[in-house]
Image 1 (cartoon, rainbow, N blue to C red):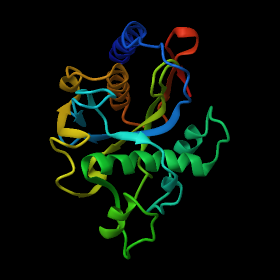
Image 2 (cartoon, rainbow, N blue to C red):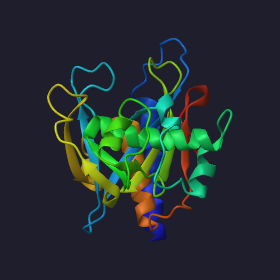
Image 3 (tube, rainbow, N blue to C red):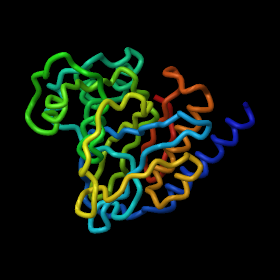
Image 4 (cartoon, rainbow, N blue to C red):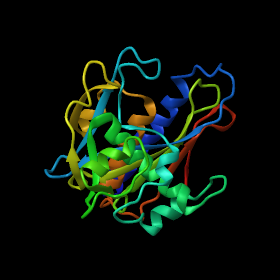
Length: 254
């Protein structure tokens, strides 16, 4: 087991070096990184765990044609949506590390952004049934109200955090969460398609998913997920933090 974990770390270090060598258009003006949440849906119902990936439309200016996990930036409504159960205390504490003006509300909004964006891009609702339709802010959260479902971030695990390097035209301070697919409470059809942000969705075993055309950071988070699964998918597993000070990617621990 120790040798296996060491091999995974070596692969991750190799991918970090690769991140230093590709996707190097860092000539844009400085823009602030926006807080964002990404969700990795994990199906562990057979011996080969699978993850859900979406293929981005080829006409998009940002990562055209790439396979990605659903996600996007935090919206103001994410601070006002009620939940079925609160964040785990360990996760809340991690999300408040190394941020400006940390608060439980900000930690919760990061987690809910990942759940909301996943619905907007895939039609999948992660949550728990509510006895009555909850009060909710306008926008995508209305679909949860209509389905009588409250988002449930209690089982989320933080797989990693990564900040887009300075010089990129779009920058995100992205938190990559994972949750078991058994937490899917509802699905709406017709969200993906030829004219949507994600043109198709695929459930792929981890080892096969890594062969798809995807951004370097997505590939890195697949390896981080694989490392965590091998360790028992524990809440207390160390969480990596990727950033690029002085022109080189670093892998630190939160």
